[in-house]
Image 1 (cartoon, one colour):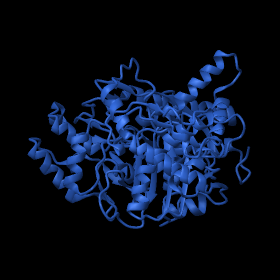
Image 2 (cartoon, rainbow, N blue to C red; image 1 turned 135 degrees about the vertical axis):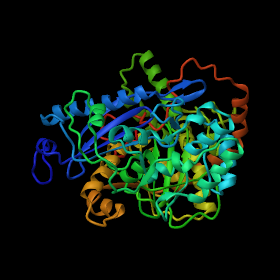
Image 3 (cartoon, one colour; image 1 turned 45 degrees about the horizontal axis):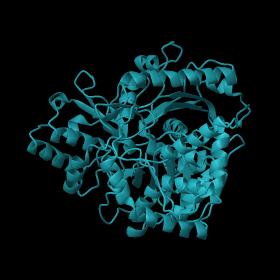
Image 4 (cartoon, one colour; image 1 turned 180 degrees about the vertical axis):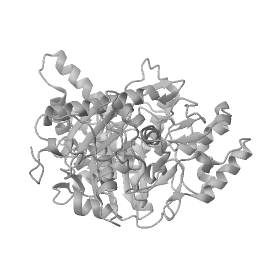
Length: 567
């Protein structure tokens, strides 16, 4: 293997002409090392799971540290195995993570409560009040909703609160000593002002008044990190930071570190979707769409988050808590059956077979319905979820239609949010890219997504490592860009030149079928509500309810090159 200039990757790595991206997803932490051509040179991963503690989803900071070290150690092993050199340093690095959530720290930097992840939906009262007060949609997941809910609940830790950040922000602080967020990640903490690149000042003042009315004296601006745009410096890797990543002491400090970002931002970078009228869908066990806007929306919609690209341009985000987890569970059941009858079917083959079968299912799913809600789903106003499959006695019930129903279910809530954006707001979209585990089987979920949003959907061959690769690109951008070069130009003229795309056009029969399916889906939502109200969870384990992962393995034959879901 050589780079385009004929230089062996080992020489590139030894010379430090690399960029490292680390992304902490909900079930996997991934480290990707790229070279001067932005190609992936090595990859390291570490699997982890969230835990349900006192009714809230969390990860311990010890698990964060162990995961960082595990992924970097696996990366170093991959470098050694593939290129015959030691990973002793990098040219630049950056870290990203699942967005939102609540990391509250005291003056000594100690955690005041267990890290509350974005998946918790106990913040309904706070989100509703803040949205009304700000005239800006504040979803359940956002950090400020978690903070205000803690205020409404009278939590005792608030008197010792000194600093508030995200998971990516916390890791960046450990690596550099700098308390800063990239603007994309920041835009899921509290509203930002795209014009100034800072926090929305009038809303900061309003929040302080709301807190005072609830008996809590604070100045939110003093609790929040600084904000940095993509391409700006955000510190260097300290000795303590290098030791955190690599306790063996091989990794040298001193590398420049770019602003930390959220997984939504790295997904935009990984799919070259940072310019207006471009968008991407990122799908694993959660699913979300990002559409870069030409202008502000006409009014507030609870289905749409207003965030930004890593460069600060406004973005409408449709975020659904539930994506492919339930689909994965059903495929696992079929795999178990295959093993029970002695069939020699590996998991990837089972996925490939079942996904391919869905192509022959009834266009409208033949009267079958499924709800993939392992957790609450704010877009459909459900604070909890119960996975549900149902049919009428005369519904078409065969394997192909059943699998199409499960795939349609994984996309249905996204469709509801996208209808608001594309129809109610009239937003124009020139292209939509798709990445994540759901799209790894050739031409199946990609085709159904095109039907769901009635828009051509493309997958590409560059960023097979997904968000971690996108984070490495952001690190490279911060150190390699030409003076005054913006992110969109860097991606378009340097990173994605010559990229091959496979595009699925909407099939009229699929479009009509999905329309019919989603009408039944919305009409039957009271059934899902009744399941939440009357079926207790009775769960003895919390492991499977994770998000933002890449649960769908690759097919054994070469798949369509796609993005991998941030993991």
